Length: 247
Image (tube, rainbow, N blue to C red; front, side, top):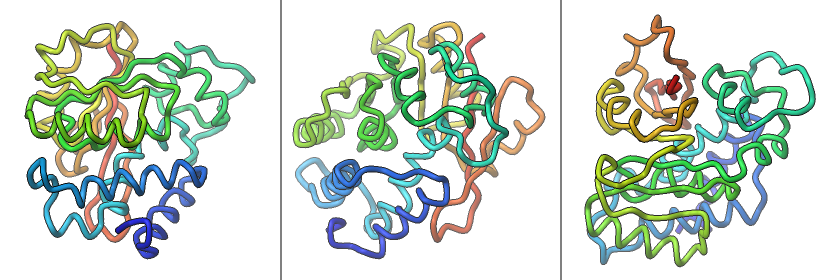
C-alpha cells in the first residue's frame, strides 16, 4: 500500500526535509513496510481506524519520528560548542534542547547502548519507527494487551529488528529499570504519565512524551520540563514533544 503511495511518501519525506533529516532508502523502505503491516494485518484485530489508515505515514510515522528529530535538534537552536560529547552530555542536551551542534554520527555514537522503553506501545508507534531509525538504541515496547503484543512480535520478526524487545506487561510490572529514556504517545495526562515513568528511569534519564499542545499548555512555565512544538503534514492542530529529566 504505502510502498506505492507517492502522495503519502512525499508528505513524510517533505516533513523530514523540513527538519533537515535525510534517511537512507533502506530505512525509508523499512518504515513503509512497518506502515503496511499495521494497516493491512487483520488477524490481530483492528489496529487502526480507516481514517487514520489513509494517512499513516504523514500522521503516525511522522509523529513517531519527532523524538528522533528532536534529539538531533536541527530545528533552529544555536550550535553547541566543542567537537565531542559524552553519553551523559547527550542526555542533558536532550533535556535542554541543545543538541544542534552534534552531527548525526556523533549523536548515534553517543546513544549507542542506551535503553529506551515505550509505555502503552499499542501497535508500535512511536517505538518501532524509532527503533528503525536508531538501531544503536535498545528499545522495549511495553504493552499489556495480548493481541497487540502478538502483532508487535510478528512485526519485529518480519522487519528483523534486533534492537527491539516486546514486553507483554504494564510498565509498572515490567521489571524494567535504570532506563535512559521512557516515552509514551497520547497516553494520559503529562502528570500521570510522568508518575508512571519516573521510577523506571536512571538518574539523569529522560521522560519523552508526544501530546496535543492544547493538553500541555499549562506546562509552559514549568522549569522542570522542556517543550518542543511542531506541526504535522495536513493536520490543523499543534503538537508538542515534552521532556522531563529524572534529577
